[in-house]
Image (cartoon, rainbow, N blue to C red; front, side, top):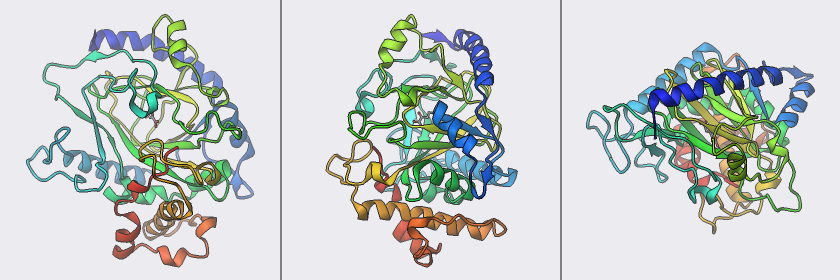
Length: 379
Ligand SMILES: O=C(O)CCC(=O)C(=O)O
């Protein structure tokens, strides 16, 4: 295992080269609309490269609200796997949810590379670094269930521009996937080994480059190439890629030669096709990275499928299951409208005639939002 210093040095050159490649590709800018629809140049650019970086999507106020609540959540998270109390000894937040929302890692480690986790989709082990002697044994890497755990999480889920993007990419009847707040503390955050997200449709006769949907990530902090998400552009078109062979052809190194960093400023939002090969490296930098992530599918990609990721295989995504999970979108739109009354709310076509049934209230929170993540639609 490398020392953190050696790991940083090894990353620095790769980061510089990656930044140059990223600059050549571009594929970033503000969300732009043309006659109310996502600008066709953005749609084309997304389908060409399998990602897009939207700049300056969230106002500072919303970034601040998210930061405040995520920091509070981190302060009241359990101190480690299996623990029930936070750092002050109080009962930790979220541990009574039906689906436990936290995923911990050992600092600067790769917990999933070359394991069978998630159908073995992380085929190759990433380089690891030795954390400082006083580092905690485990750190939080992922917190699920943001629409239940933080109010700003529910509100951002109803962001009109992001929902309009989802509609442009996945069709008007788009439906949710899951959500996860990725936390990469400086000097502690672990890696996420190279993978493609989808596990269901690789051999499907209907396979195409969008069949496994996409993920957004709202960035709450400045993230450099040393800490951010990396992608290999264009891999969403290739079908299932042989990651182990790519790493082997790269002399065993996880620093894949064509990859680019999706570096961001606070309030930027990345959109990454779930079939695009992506990873993040152990965070030996000074960046505190918090990425609030969630995804959407085409409805027809999930209808009638059964649980693969995150759900037991006997769970079937029938209309009832999908509609229930999708109603979180409508509640989020309404919750947002109370705090951002000057915005034009997004009209979610599947529920536009039932919007009144999904106005935010404590009762609707209990029936739609509480434990909504047990109904995540993972494929
Ligand atoms: O953001 C990261 O560090 C990893 C994200 C990721 O792998 C995913 O969303 O599937």
